[in-house]
Image (tube, rainbow, N blue to C red; front, side, top):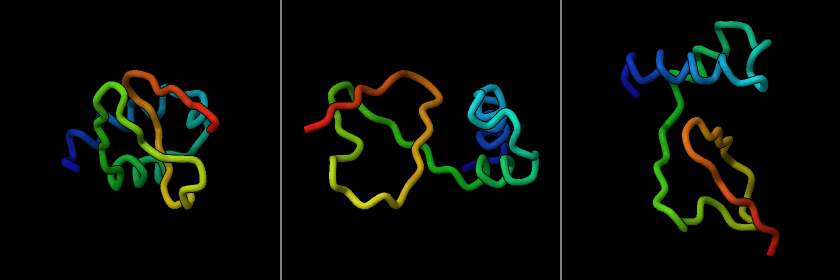
Length: 68
């Protein structure tokens, strides 16, 4: 991720109530190391039972969550 992308993401994360109280240093690290994932409509991100190895934060758009 480029510095500009990281700085833009930092602002988006900071605006989220989930990250509002996180100190600057760890939030900056998260923004700098994040890897964007772009999904097309209807595309699946994860499936029930997949190992929990990643953290996903939706910064634009929306996801539908279904239990199967």
